Length: 400
Ligand code: PLP
Image (tube, rainbow, N blue to C red):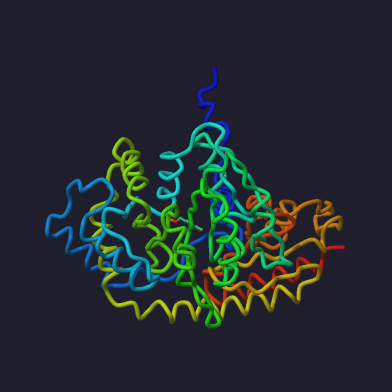
């Protein structure tokens, strides 16, 4: 009998973590490796947030808390949604989980029955389909393309919705494409969703604050208030406040759903770390002035990477609106021969050959459900990016 459960056997380990791991192993062997695979900001958690955590420890805020978040953090989240998104929630409509990832997982565990479908546009964040599978549901993919900015087209979305559809997952700005939906684009998506009242919407707004060129961020419940009653608006402190290790994510939505998510937590994780919750209160209520300059730094890096990749033979790199990823196509290199003498037959081959030849770690597009592409995370220094993109150019020049 297999040790692995049937539910877990439907799931694959995270490809981004695997790529990062492979790069670490090569580094440990003494290879000169540049990693463009990690999905976290390279700057440090601001000092005021760290101090709030230290104070929480000193004040003895070190015990179990309410399962789905302390009242002070729920109030701070209510304030954030009102201030930044014009969305009005009560604290009882808020869930705090140990990271954005568990918010989504808890929502899926709380609501999916075997055979229930979840519509996921591709390319998707690696964890969506596997979380759906673990919860017993069936992912239903809707491909997008570079030609439409990697944004789901209303007719394609409509065609993917069936009577079994429980959720539609939206993610803007997107990991891995960096695509962000304008108000008009969300309006068109909302028009489709209005026609299907049995469908719930989970919008993953994790990269809300990382948008460029004066792009204005919108979230779907704000664009179409009629969807408020069936939308879970998810966000977190990981990316905007450089708090990936603290493990705090949150969401707001209808109270019955929030109660079910707390029920899942009550029998699994219990509360997120009490100390991290106090740090997150400070993150949301404290000074926000570093967010914009950080986004500007990321914009500079985006421009550097897009420009250098578009000078590489066989690559085409669209300019994304947000997040800290680009999702170039390597179609122009397929069927050609890598410096190793092997044929590049897929984006996975491309990533493997690039790592072997030039020591640059990227994540292949099949892991995000849309080939032939690869993802670069530019949440690293300009020097590292210049070096890495230079190596990518050299690799592409050496492909025959
Ligand atoms: N959603 C998206 C789109 C992400 O890229 C990530 C992290 O990479 C998460 C959610 C999860 O964030 P957290 O680290 O808070 O679990």
